[in-house]
Image (tube, rainbow, N blue to C red; front, top):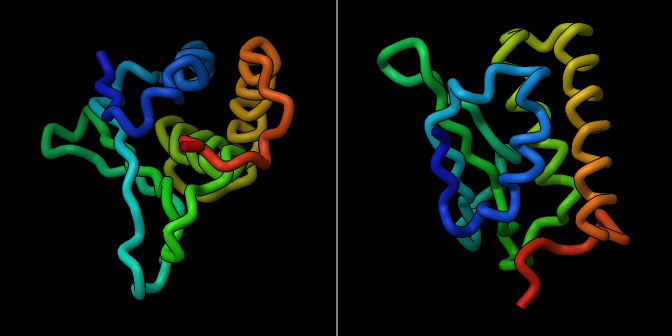
Length: 125
């Protein structure tokens, strides 16, 4: 079972919607990170293979270097991208096609959840 750190628990229904497209059971945990103020933002997320070579961890940027929360669309696109790596490790056309299929699933979840604007910032306070 995948562990969701508190700052990304809202992603669980999106993640679960991809279960018959990618082997989500291989993901051990998903956590969010913030870019430390003053540092250069190098990426939106990463997928790391664990030492057992069978499971993975995903990290997603949820706060920008200016302290602003990231946009929902960016986080969902990044999650879809990292999940596509579970099937197609390289950045091929097949990887992009799978990422698109995952995003289509995410759009259905967003609609079910009543999301009106995917360009809203996550974790609004």
